Image 1 (tube, rainbow, N blue to C red):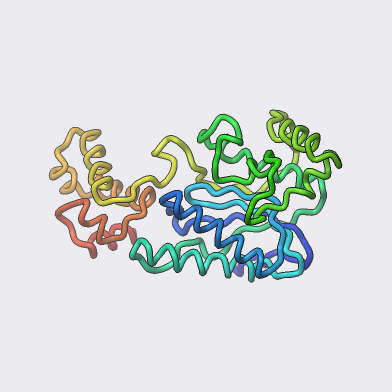
Image 2 (image 1 turned 180 degrees about the horizontal axis):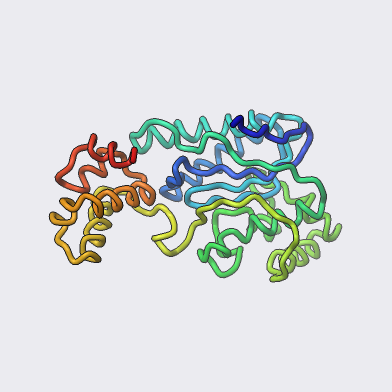
Length: 273
């Protein structure tokens, strides 16, 4: 079945979601997040788009972008290629980092952009990472609450704040109340099917071979087996390896190393089904 064409129009606002390929983590450290935001700022200067809101989660990103006449695909391609080059070089890996197609939807009204900004800024709250949106460092909410203009002019807060008041101080107060409202909205937004969480069983969290081995050891203990016996039990081992792949950034070679007694080609065969 052919893929559905992306809904696009020049001089439009989009809600964009970009997720890691196969649910993998795209930010392993604060340094990665800082690099991504610096890169986003540079590309913003190049293409002259406006960024109304953002939120960086561990394995996906939310952006609210006004394209200002530049094709949204061109913007995202430039951002993704540059960040993937950085990430692969830093972590000595190759291949795709992001899912091939980013998700996007057109924002059609002022009401929608307001609710979208509330949705984006509450992502970390919904995921259980923080109690309030200002507690999360890697979203644009703090810039909305700040009286000082950011040095890199990354986020364009003026438009959304102007929908509340022409007085900046009053606008910030009202926007803060709006974002923290608990009432639901009838607007349906693009969703990501694997949100971040403090619970390690709900998001990728394994970054090293040692952590992978601990994961397998835990699975063995749950089945009242030694790790050696667990690895010899093919059905249980294969299920654990598929789960390890889902919740880690480990390569096939590193997964084999974590198992201790199987080859990279065996891991590849297991993951192929």
